[in-house]
Image (cartoon, rainbow, N blue to C red; front, side, top):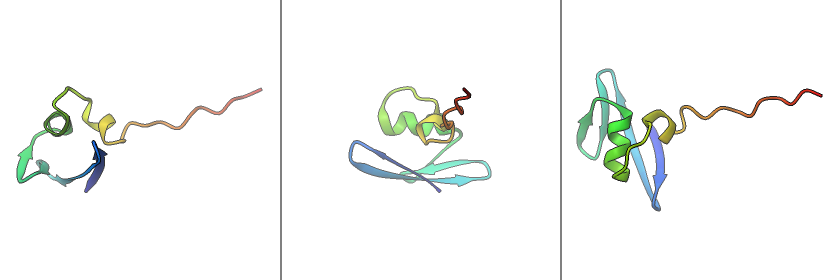
Length: 60
């Protein structure tokens, strides 16, 4: 399960072997779910925090 807060609402997305479930519908990609939630185009993994990278170590 993926969880994301958007506009003060908590959204839970179920991860299935063949897609994603949100709001009693099945979607083939996380980007489709992100679009359904926000109404704008998003990279789905980034919207759900799966592509966040920690900052690179600073070497002096």
